[in-house]
Length: 217
Ligand code: SIN
Ligand code: FE2
Image 1 (tube, rainbow, N blue to C red):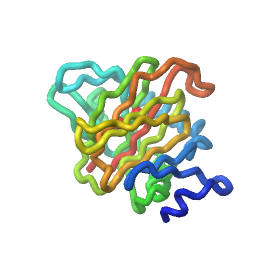
Image 2: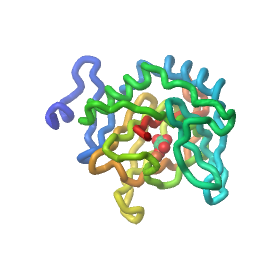
Image 3: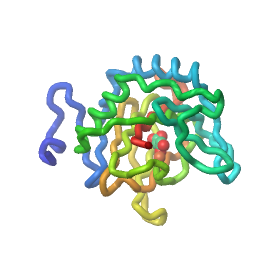
Image 4: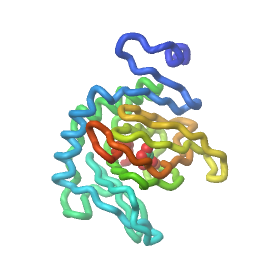
């Protein structure tokens, strides 16, 4: 298994780089699907528009978010949680496309987490200057499932910390089509995104979109 991960890419298999015991970067794995993912994102955002949520501390997030799947991630002055309904519309979140669930399951399996079935996908949109402060993903009900994160558009510098906020962070660049999976012993690692540098991506323009797939409920 480990040998496979370190082997050079064969055929059209994405190159898998193991960064820690439970953290794998699948270089470019989503790139062939990017145009379809973008069409799907447009359709989802037509139903559940991107919005800037307010944190429990009263801070308006710079990153714009929406969700699809049975559960969507929401933040407001009462806290962070998952909700079956989009608070913007009072309606259920748009369905998660089957091809998305499949992609997330395939990526998780390649990273060593077989049987991952996402029930929530948080869609984050970054414009130049937007960042995501160091945090843990811990609003999910159980932590046995990994997080599967798909990057599209402009590259971002991702900070991968430890299980304590004070631990030093490694920095890695997430590029268009990369999928980062973290789970098992790394599931509760702190992570964040540095302010997005400007630029122009051929498909997305001056923007980065990140999809994070979770087993939330
Ligand atoms: C997140 O932590 O929810 C998103 C990470 C990213 O944008 O790469
Ligand atoms: Fe996160």
